[in-house]
Length: 199
Ligand SMILES: Nc1nc2c(c(=O)[nH]1)N[C@H]1C(S)=C(S)[C@@H](COP(=O)(O)O)O[C@H]1N2
Ligand SMILES: [Mo]
Image (tube, rainbow, N blue to C red; front, side):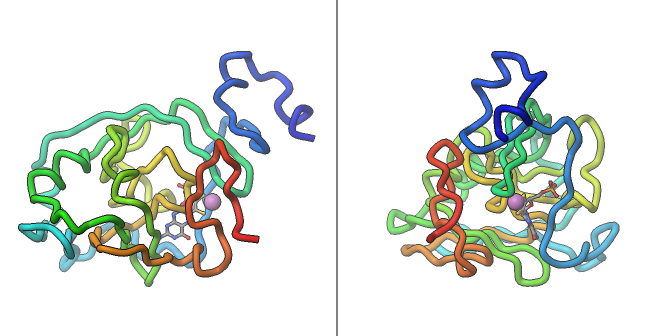
């Protein structure tokens, strides 16, 4: 089935599709709850809390005043679609966290989104060069369907660990399973190891 679904895919593309995945050219929309809003409400903010020397709280204006980083990457949803060469713009996470001062005890992060959606990850995964607080996709403002006004982009792990409608990052000295991880998804979520589900 995988091979059949990947017919018409070039060799270069094939090498970039993890096991059990198939290539899509469109951009599927997937989320557990509803879309919380079409644009950021007036009291919207973005916070970095927990084990940082200087906690952060930005308004939308402050977020958009930061230097812009562009990332082109492949993304992989656990339901088996992969999309290649997706183009994003936003604020690079690693330099931001380093500027705030990462406490030496910090090992894990919980990303907090609207309506209680969370995802956990090792701090190390979040410090990769291609991790963004993303607000533009494919040269345009990120659409509400895809998490606008702000989502996390963490392309090295299955895409459920890239929360849409992101509101904060919390640095912890322990791991704390997120929304899907508590419901039986694999805690580590490496698409190349097919770490899909816990059982
Ligand atoms: N807030 C929130 N973020 C979320 C989800 C969700 O249900 N709520 N679903 C995740 C899953 S499983 C995937 S595959 C991607 C899908 O992103 P897309 O709709 O932009 O393709 O968002 C992730 N981020
Ligand atoms: Mo997903």
